[in-house]
Structures are given as C-alpha cells and as structure tokens.
Length: 250
Ligand code: NAP
Image (cartoon, rainbow, N blue to C red; front, side):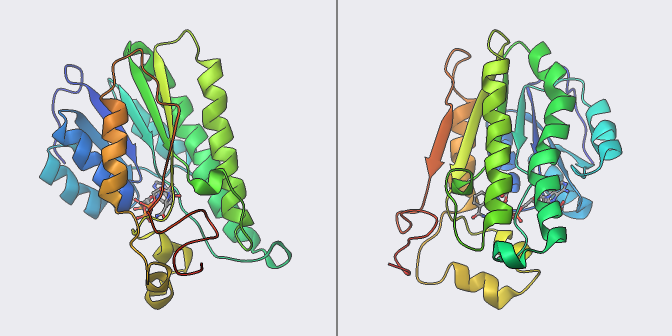
C-alpha cells in the first residue's frame, strides 16, 4: 500500500478497480496526474496495481455499509469519483429469475453506487470542482430477453445518477454517465459464474471494446474544464448495433 499527500494532489477514487474497466480507469487517471485511490474486494490485485501506478489500495465492498464508511473515512480529498463496481449474474427469463442473482445485481450496481456516492458527496462538493462518473451500460437504456435482472439494475443506477444531475445544480460537481456496449473484461466470467467457455463465446466472431477504450473516455471527461459537463456518453464496438444485434447475431 502506497500513500502520499492526498490533500495537495487532485484525488480520483475508482470503485471496482481490481479488474476490467476500473483497473484501466485507475491507470489512465494516474497517468493524467491524479492521486488514485482504488477499492474492491480482491485486495491482492489492488495492491499490485497501486504499486504500479503509485496509488493507494483499500478493501471496499460497496454492498457493506461499514466497509464504505471505513473507506470514506480515510479520504481527505476527493475530486473525481468513478462509480464502476458492478456487474451481472446469470441470464434468465423473468419467470425463471434467480432472486439471489437479482439481489446481488441490485445491491452492487444500485445500492452500492448510492452508498459510495452519498459517502463521498461532501468531499466532492468541498473540492470546488468535483466529478462523478458512473459506469452504467447500454443495459441502462435498453432491455433484452433474459436480462431483466441486469437491465433493471442498470436502469435504476442510471436514474440515480441522472437525478443527481438536477439535484446538484448550483453545486460545483459535474456528472458523467458512461454507457458502454460490449467490453471484454471479467464481466462475462462473473455473469456465468466462472464458466470460461461460455464467457469466451460472448466475444467470439466480433471485436469488442477493451477496458482501455472506456478508460480513455473516462479520462477525457475528467480532463474537461469545470463549466463543461458531458452528461451521457454511449460507446459501442463497431460490431454491435444495440444490446440485441451484433455482427454475429445479424
Ligand atoms: P469486471 O472485470 O468483472 O470488473 C468488475 C469490478 O467490480 C471488479 O473490480 C470487482 O472487484 C468489482 N466489484 C464487484 N462487486 C463489488 C463489490 N461488492 N464491492 C466492490 N467492488 C466490487 O467487469 P467490468 O466489465 O470491468 O465492469 C465494470 C463496470 O462496467 C460494471 O459496473 C459493469 O456493469 C459495467 N459494464 C460492463 C460492460 C461489459 O461488457 N464488460 C458493459 C457495460 C457496462 P472485486 O470482485 O475484487 O470486488
């Protein structure tokens, strides 16, 4: 764990930074000069990343109020919050929905985002030029069969984020929602409970986005001047038209 003068350098907090988009965002923001504080449950991975980028790694479980409280209590300054922790569990029709999977998705994507945002909002406002980036998904804008657990959670997460945009008018905080299509990360591995064959099939026959593609957009949003708010950015691979149609499915 590396620590430095968090009160003098601009600080970016990235949740879910132990893999995928969060890890790439942490690298991009560190490259741009931020003191980066990264949180997730797999601390071994976080520590390795923090050593590489000169950031600070901390255990964080966004579904646990005490963990969020402990995490927030160590932060003297927060200029950027990237609400990235999240994911999907399973692909099932509503009639066959697994309630535990739904609870996981809602707790992580929706209530988790609410917990960490509430906890860090005072510091973001105090920074004088705060930015909240929330990684929702095209699943926050569309629905697809067998996906209601995830699409409903991502819609709710998007609504939470977009509501803040109005509620914070007059406060020095910008809000950017990023809605990616298919990105090759551990997302499908988590969704299919560690089934690598099934996860690999998701990306076969097309070129998905990489975590770095999304991280560059996050860093770009953070680099805008205080009066410029990028409200919502949708990015998809060229091979994907929407959540249901890609070059493979036609
Ligand atoms: P990923 O590689 O599976 O990363 C998910 C991250 O979330 C991991 O670092 C994981 O860390 C963290 N996380 C999960 N539960 C957590 C919890 N309770 N507390 C703290 N951290 C937690 O997948 P990804 O694609 O980078 O996903 C990042 C975000 O992008 C998610 O919100 C996802 O819904 C969204 N997204 C992904 C895609 C895609 O196609 N990949 C598309 C659109 C949107 P630990 O397990 O170590 O805690």
